[in-house]
Amino acid sequence: QVQLQQWGAGLLKPSETLSLTCAVYGGSFSGYYWSWIRQPPGKGLEWIGEINHSGSTSYNPSLKSRVTISVDTSKNQFSLKLNSVTAADTAVYYCRVDTGLDFWGQGTLVTVSS
Amino acid sequence: DVVMTQSPLSLPVTLGQPASISCRSSQSLVYIDGNTFLNWFQQRPGQSPRRLVSLVSNRDSGVPDRFSGSGSGTNFTLKISRVEAEDVGIYYCMQGTHWPRTFGQGTKVEIK
Image 1 (tube, rainbow over the protein chains, first blue to last red):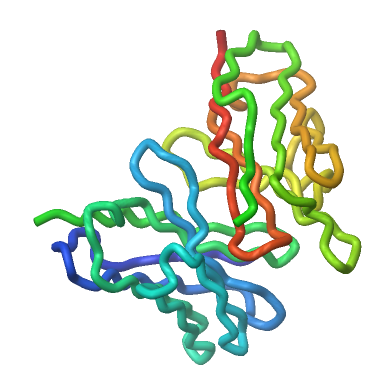
Image 2 (cartoon, each protein chain N blue to C red):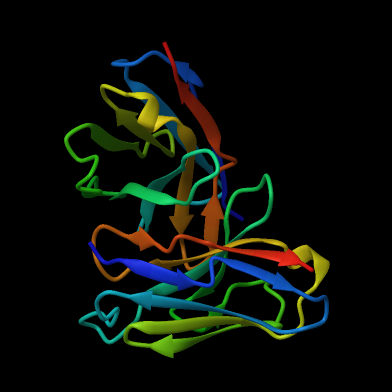
């Protein structure tokens, strides 16, 4: 049974870099796409991007210039970095994988405020 | 981007009664391999989303059989045959055929 556990800084100032990591327990990286999704307070879900075990990525064009998703297969972890954050990036960030079964992290609230 | 449009956005339902949510896409969701990558997610208050249905109509493991998905091309529906109290939450459709993946706005299901 796959479990995802995520962590990262919850409070950032404008222009700083958001950095989150998602650890994968009970599963391997092979054959799947691992994604990041966010949800602003009281709003809907937005797909940020995804990566596979070989490091091939796809990003939402609305964030592409600022986002990097990477994978560390030796640690069974994948990460999200979002540069130059503003208040509009305040959201709960989720990691997710679809192995045929669907698994989500617990979510991390990231607040951007001066 | 493919726009996913859900209706209604708010759905008050009486316990034990059926409920239906519509999701329409701005482009066909049929992939070149013939699969249609349309998912339905449930998000209960304060929880991470949970997938209910993939590939239009495949219920995920552990999902009660009162949930069913149907549709094709650009028109899709999630039905709850008899709403229970635990079904309260927001339901999202999401397409996985095209990049970027996109979600519907969400439909809030509440008990009358």
